[in-house]
Image 1 (cartoon, rainbow, N blue to C red):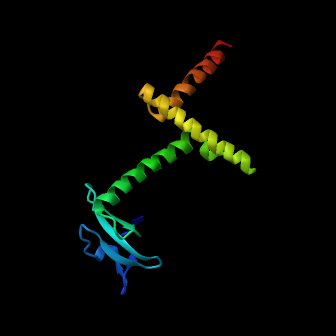
Image 2 (cartoon, helix red, strand yellow; image 1 turned 30 degrees about the horizontal axis):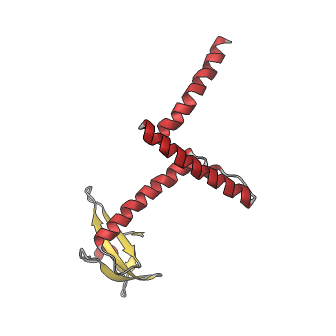
Length: 144
């Protein structure tokens, strides 16, 4: 989990930014949670990120690979909500909601497969569907 630099750890309570965290991580007691291992990651732009895990046996490289995979999952969730209608479900009945979720996931997989063939982005795919319909509607309006 990502932690803010002012998060209080240990007793007496100290902010994370005040601790000297070695490359192999530092075991700390997180106020309100318990014992975790914290790693410090310095970004190229000068920003410092603090990542904590309850698994005390993990290394910095393992945490970094998990964090990178987490970002690709976040991108997939955003695409699912923005381009596949996942967030627009108004079903009240459980079966209808499950059907909507299933169809959204099938749509995501099929769009991804098609995108690999066409070498396009999710937003180009949506534009390629909407653009001809808009052109046809405008053509009908202008001819009338």
